[in-house]
Length: 229
Image (cartoon, rainbow, N blue to C red):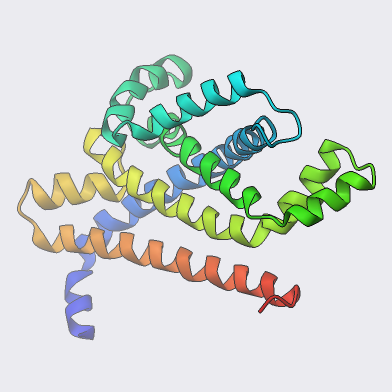
């Protein structure tokens, strides 16, 4: 087995895989904080403006929710194609890892928004009502009660987000975004290099699995400190 991996990740393969891995990491590292920031704002807004929220706004909630659902329903490939002209206008490029960041954000922000909303919905209503009865403001309830209580679930959802971002970078690679996806398609599939294709897929799997294990470990540690497990 060791010999297989040594042969698979030879000097030629590493020369192709390592730069592509960095490109994938670059796209994910840049897109993740943007997506988390927007997802938190959107998810909290959906919760607050719900009919059972702090400030019910049915028209805004339904309209905004419909927009989020519509973007989520679009195939990632379509969103990437539509986002390329926007990347050209905003960033001045329509090719390479930098151009993919806007597409990644558009694809994943609605997903994370719904995950944030669901995480908050799982918070005990009693704790929220207790904070209300003590005269806490919406800001305090949101950032001192709801988000801290939902934090373990948010960590798991953050892992879902990052793994989704990695998968979308793979799709974007077919449109010249670079990264492991482009390597798998251009160097592996199109050139009939099964070794390079397999190497790219294995690296993607390792990245996803490492993030999953790290997220689970952090989440369990937080829950353990709260004496919930």
